[in-house]
Image (cartoon, rainbow, N blue to C red; front, side, top):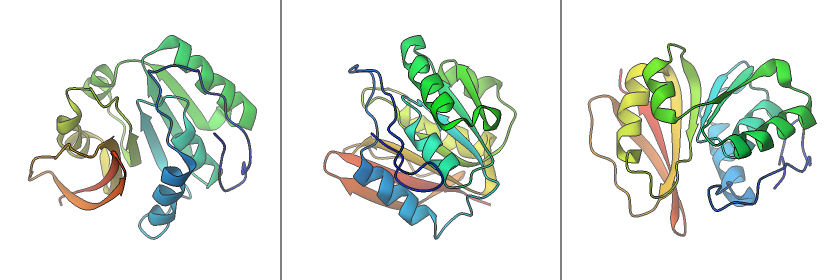
Length: 181
């Protein structure tokens, strides 16, 4: 796994070898960021990487100009990979790592984010609820929420968000949400 573009292009990232982590492939990551460049201005963006795993999506955003990235990861061993990756790119001052459950973070967070990545485990039971909570509480007016999930999952219709696009990669789909204004 590596950084695919920007000022840290080519850096190889650490990732714990565990079934708990499902890092975004280069193909998925490239597709995500290629489509984002036409939707959101990453320079000076405040980014949130939920279920951060190795932190590859947040680090890619930093490499492409994001102002600040907050990583949320519950597992302490996996957090060690994020720390190694942050130290590798020497962007400690542009990041915050919170060892926390996503539920606790969302309940207690008051910050607003321009871009939110969420890559929950496929078996995570609350994935369907994430768009409503995030769009209601923490997504900025013109922000984007991207959730990577199993293709068979469908999100309920809501007055809080729009599903802008879905990109399918076999059994994985990335759904892009915007806040209804």
